[in-house]
Length: 221
Ligand code: FPP
Image (cartoon, rainbow, N blue to C red; front, side, top):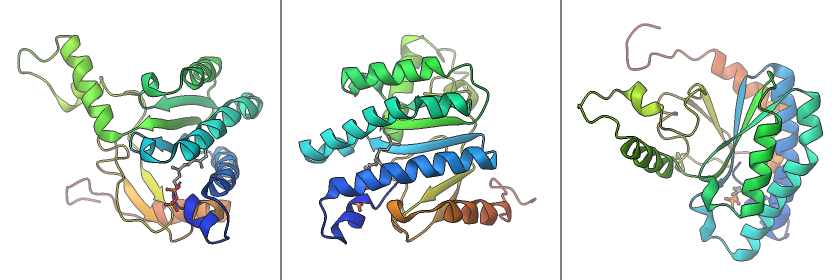
């Protein structure tokens, strides 16, 4: 959800105003995705590197997360949407970690779309945490250890790899997002800043994605 800061700065507003608009876009896109029958939607809300921002900006984004978790729960219930989390909950403010845990628990039986909030998330961090878990479990000692075995230690082993990663604000980089799971994801990059991203843009990305030939390193289509 890149470009919130630039959106605000372009309007001579403070960066946090961009995050406020970004939250509105996130709500619209979650609704659009649910209406379109998308099964899994991950929102990259806050990375393990975003702590480098000013305390004011970090505090503001965390406040929006709190607000989002409280305000949207009814919408999630009505639409049978399940909330999940990618990232290190241990590094989040304890009240947010608790609200997130409760929201995940509250919605775990829903069979509609799954919305995964990537919060205090980094792809490298997820892989390192997975390695710690597998070492603690004493796994792989016989040397027989497959990619599938490794997946088991990632944050959400049951969630399929992403088909499509949408990047706003015209950036051509992974930004530490789903490094393992996104190995064969298709990218769709738009110059639009996240607060300006619309349901129509989202549909355009899906339509363009449907026409892609995915070979996963092979030659057949
Ligand atoms: C990246 O844009 C955006 C973020 C780090 C924060 C995203 C957070 C929200 C949209 C609000 C919370 C949303 C939910 C769903 C709880 P940037 O600030 O790096 O933009 P810039 O590159 O233009 O400076």
